[in-house]
Length: 220
Figure (cartoon, rainbow, N blue to C red):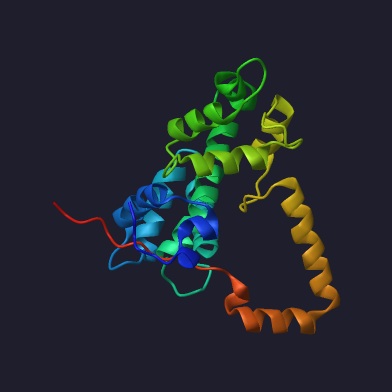
């Protein structure tokens, strides 16, 4: 598929998704969206369906608010496609971890189900994503998950890596090197608040890149 975007605006250049992968994400966005936006009531119902079997009512209410703030990054009280695709994978990962930790099999049993010869690789993570009903399970997303969980960057995830990944409650998907870089930048920002403020002003909304919204699929 081709959305006709200029190459410099294209999803591949910005976050690594192919056109076909973006179509998959767009289909799930359209299921929740009205007039190109997801509002809070629709988001709340979706989150409750995703977490209701692992959380009590009060915890679920807090989870809804926490995730809403993670998705609605510009504070507009709506979630656009760019925000949805940026946070969607992290949302699915968070839900999968909750279910894995609370399941009868636990972390060890789950790892053994998807591992071969003591290691999980991309095919195992792909199957995990399918079984835990991620929005989509694209090749790009599979590679992202393996990269985050794989501490020694050899392309394989052992039990220790998987356990650490499952027990982490961080929302953002970061590799070890990315996390170190972010923390170093944050510390540098504390030392030079004026410079950080100037950079944010020049970039607009902290310089965060936006994902162009592909048009809805034509109706037959």
